[in-house]
Each structure stands twice: as C-alpha cells, then as structure tokens.
Amino acid sequence: MAAKGNDPSASEVLITRTFDAPRRLVWQAWTDPAHIMRWWGPSGFVNQSCESDLKVGGNFRLEMRAPDGNVYPCIGTFREIVEYERIVYEGEAAEGHPCGAGIPPHATVTISFADQGSKTKLTLHTRFASLERKQAAAEARFIVSWEEALDRLGQALQT
Amino acid sequence: MPADSLSCTFAALADPTRRAILARLASGETSVGKLAEPFHISAPAVTKHLNVLERAGLISRGRQAQWRPCKLEAKPMREAATFIEQYRQHWEQSFDRLDNYLQQLQAQEKKNGRKRK
Image 1: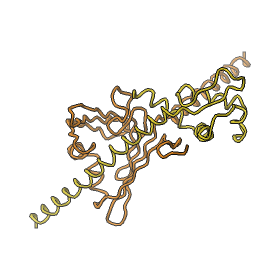
Image 2: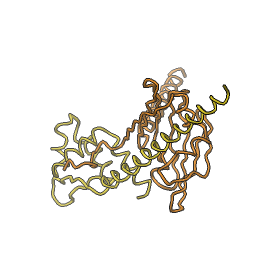
Image 3: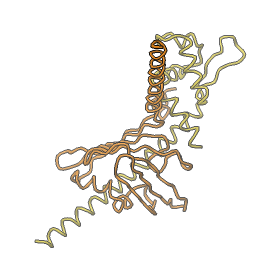
Image 4: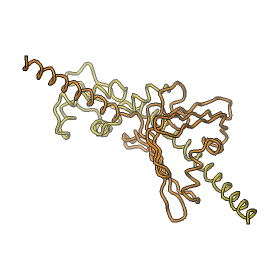
C-alpha cells in the first residue's frame, strides 16, 4: 500500500525553482509588498492588501481573493531574516483555509535564496506543525523547574 | 477539512518513529509487541506513540481481541495528501507568476537604463 500521495513523511514540503534574475531582484520581489501583491497566490487570485514588517518578530499579512470571490488571509510572523539569503516565517493559528494562503497555521516556512550563475535558486521549505519548537519549549520549562528545585534545595541546606 | 485536525495529523507525522510505525502498518494490522520489535524501544514507549497516532485518527485499535491489533486508517492520510497537493499548487503557481513578474521587472530596468544613458 505504498501508493503515491500516501507518503507518511508528508509533514514537510520542499519546492525549489531557479529564476532567471539576479538574487537582489528576487529578494526585492519577495520582500516589497508592492511587488509581492503582483505574484503571490495561484493563477487567477488577486491580492487585496499586503503588509510586511520585515524584521524579526514583525508581522506579515496578506489578503488573497480567489476567482470565486472568497478571501483567504495569510498571516505570519518573521522568525529570521538574513538579507538576500533567508527568510523564516511562522504561520499564525488563524481561522480559515489550512493552506493559510501559503503560510499554514502552526507551520514554519523557510525561503532560501542562492546564486546559480547569473540566476537565483529559490528553495521553499515548509514544516507543518512546529513540533520542534514545542518540544524545545517543554524542555526549557523542564530545565527551569529543575534549576528552581536545585535552588530551593540549596537554600534548604543552608538553613 | 478543519485546520485543527490537519495540524493534529501533521504533529503526529512529524516524529520519525511514528512515521516508521505507520509504514509498518501499511503492510497490514499487527500487535503492539510486534510493532515494538524493530524500534529498540520499550512497549510502553510504543504505546505512547500509538496513542498520539490514534488521537490523530491515523490508526485504530481493536477493542475485542486481547492483542488489540493496530490498523492504519487511510482517511486522514488521504486528506493530508490532498492538502499537500493543494499547498504545492499554491506555490508552484505563485512561482510561475513570480517568474513572469521578474521578467517584466528586468525588461523595465533595461528600458529605464537605456533612457538614463
């Protein structure tokens, strides 16, 4: 039953594309809202608005209108920005379509830009359900609680 | 399909042991003991993974038989696969549009460059 599309490792998506344009321009097209609105979304979709606060912790917000009139919001937060190299988004848990208009809720989306001669290779990596972060948070809490316990133990031994 | 049950599916799929368990179940139903064998982890650890998979609706466990056979449930996997396909389409088509747009921008830059000269 190893049918195509039933791949159990399907919690990640990797898409690459080489664009016949310099990296500087691809980066601009990807980060400037006026540019973003011209291409983001499947064919036939029109973007109504786009706000991009390009800094770590800043918000990304876009509203995409489908040919049938439905509006799909794309809401995310910038987790990492390395100019001309990498952008990491985290999708916000919002109501709406699970695709999140490109940045799904709870997903981590990493866009990497690399030179390929005079062209630019773009890599999109999406990890659905940011489990790693949850685990890291749980471990952090675990360590903190141990430190507290040891502190208390230390105090108790001194008295 | 609601976003919540999808993210539940993906959270369950995010773990390599759980994916391996699903891959094994793809060849037929089996018991917890049999499932634990190749993973070098304890039966309780396997049970923990099975609980996550069951909550996500990816497997079901027999209630009658004493060995409680585990069975793969296809529906959430199918839904996840459909979603992935839709998601891929979103970006493939966006990239087509970006490709066109970049050509336009470069043509424009060239034109402006010539004007300035």
